[in-house]
Image (cartoon, rainbow, N blue to C red; front, side, top):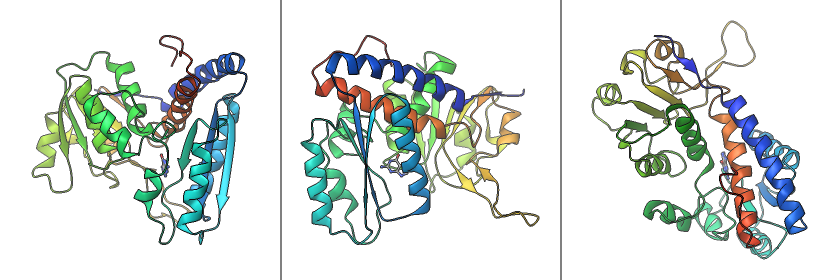
Length: 298
Ligand code: GUN
């Protein structure tokens, strides 16, 4: 079997177009644009790239982008004061503090200071709790994007056996919750799991989010499984190249011989994350204005 490639870039592009159209409708109804505030502390090169990309995507989707760049040595109290101001700003529907934070800043306290109703990253404990008990809230962007691609590809996931490899708060745990809500039978595997290959061999759905390059091998894959690879790892440079290749947590070429469908790296899950961030911001905007999002709009 040779797997179909799940084109995350194309999928995300369609979602972003749809968001742009609904955001224009929101603007005409509300008399203002939906707004996303992104806070970047310090000058981490990768974070700079992500934040710029988020700003561009926000504007391209007919929303307002507010970027706050702060020095790496900012006092915790000053950052908390900015978040307090953004929480109270009616032009701001979503707030995202780019992680990781530099220095001594207390990440948990900073996430906790974002209003749960503007927490479009879905990282606040209130939103984690809402997801756990099945209440409406914000779901972290990467797992929600994975779920959209899975249901688009497979339809009903009821009774499917799903293995999530990785147990982070940002991807693994919320991914497992979403699969469970969709009536899949879910296993969360991690670095201490015994016989991981055998656990993965039982899965109709594999979501890999461990951050280890090409750890999941082709002969671990059940024939006909669907594979979502969240990992983005850069290998050491070869043959005098300046940069190494980007690979996922799954050995792509091997796995593609067994799977029915698989996301590539790059071009799979990655592009979905920003698209879902825009989606969450627009959902926040409708809620904040007390307006009803058109049925099945997003
Ligand atoms: N750093 C890397 N990815 C993310 C993300 O999705 N949200 C935030 N806030 N920081 C990140």
